[in-house]
Image 1 (tube, one colour):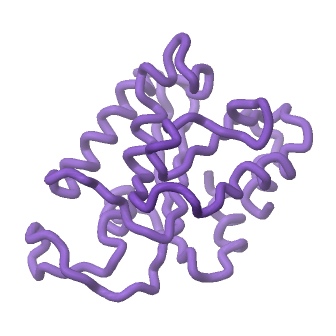
Image 2 (cartoon, helix red, strand yellow):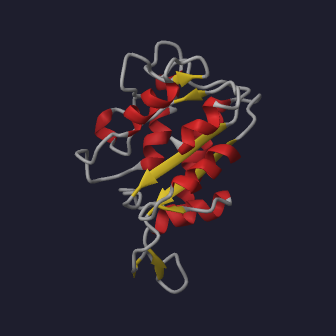
Length: 193
């Protein structure tokens, strides 16, 4: 509620969609009712959003928040006839908030930078030339212990979740700890968006 209140009380013009980190869900925008995404005119927005973001934990254990974002914004998904058609607006800022207690399961041999660049380039492609840009924020597990990581890090170690921490640093985002009471952090994040 602290997050969505920032949108519902400010008179903003927005499109708000939810996907999961589970690629088997097809990266389709989902809501708890017949809408594909919410807007500033959605009745009972707070309650409906709360019901939608409660997606549970029964999905695939191969969490892929960044890849799911790229798939959800693929031209076949957001273009004419696509399931997520109408969600993107060329002149709007795109803000993505990834909430995950696991790291990105990249399933490729790409370096972190190459993986991130590929996803960013895809977003730029669909956002178009009139875009006001995009941002990523992360609500992740910051209490975990370091683990072995690929050799492209000088010391070979980085605290888990390594990829989301890497991406947060590249986007200049301050990650929020999913293991704490992060309502105040979400209120601030919603306001900053």
